[in-house]
Length: 233
Image (cartoon, rainbow, N blue to C red; front, side, top):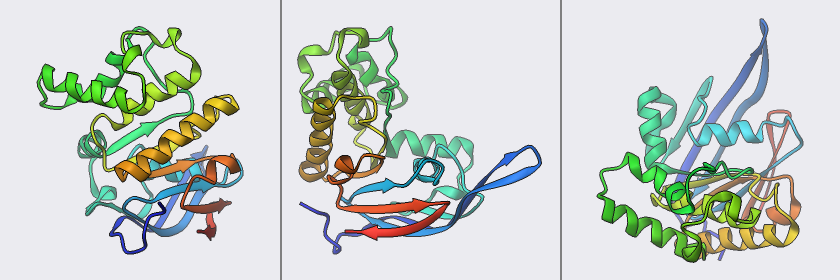
């Protein structure tokens, strides 16, 4: 069910700008972006290559930092955090889903999913309970001892999703999560993300080029040349 406008705002982006240096020349990527995301929303960020959508996603996820403006997530202005504070915040509040899975080849599915929990104070038994629950959510409980090379692309992405949700993060961020998958596997992954949103109330922010993927979102925001160009319900 689409997120209700009566839900509390969980992300507030205010006048965010970001540029990168090319030699001595600053290259603007985002210019004065402002919008809000409510709790439980499934948001798709779309736009042509170079529009700034992945940069915006990285700023929201705390992977990169703003030049100016603020990003407040669940009451915390992450633009004010230092590097160590930002790293601790990311570990506790952000689940990452990448296009190319980013699984560690020498670790099993279980061990890949467990990785974020090694930064917590959970006991070994508690970590096992969390990992097994996350793998069950993505229907891979029977593959936990398999290595990435023994899994299909769709299964690897499901392991990556289990890793992203195992800490019960505040937000899930997904950068082209179906970009490396065939159509059937992509549909399965989008269905899983939709269920995480609808059944578990996860707030999801997804960058995609694929209109079929964007159709799963409640809101589509269009970026072009660093500017927020369009908002579609």
